[in-house]
Amino acid sequence: MFVILYYDVNSKRCGKMLKTCRKHLQWVQNSVFEGEMSDAGYEKMILELRKIIKVDSEDSIVVYKFRHMKYYDRCVYGTDKKEDIKFI
Image 1 (cartoon, rainbow, N blue to C red):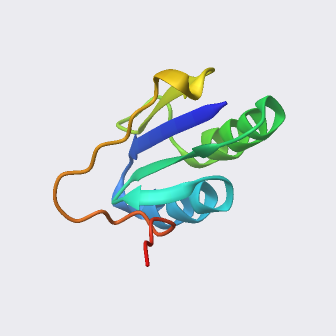
Image 2 (cartoon, rainbow, N blue to C red):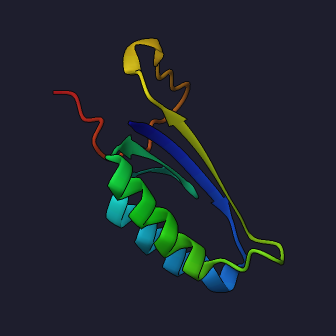
């Protein structure tokens, strides 16, 4: 599946969130990540992230899951900060 994830957490937890998300997905911009992953990989990532956030306070994680990539089109206007987009 293809996943787009973004989070909004207290600054005390930003470092842990960033490190965990980068372990599973490609960093796009600030607290936004995307990438292909298996169902098992997704479940593992969510378990790790839920251990970091405080669900009953101000923290949140939003995930968009796409089963079929044939409807996916990624358009970037301005500077693309995604690390794996390098054309020669």
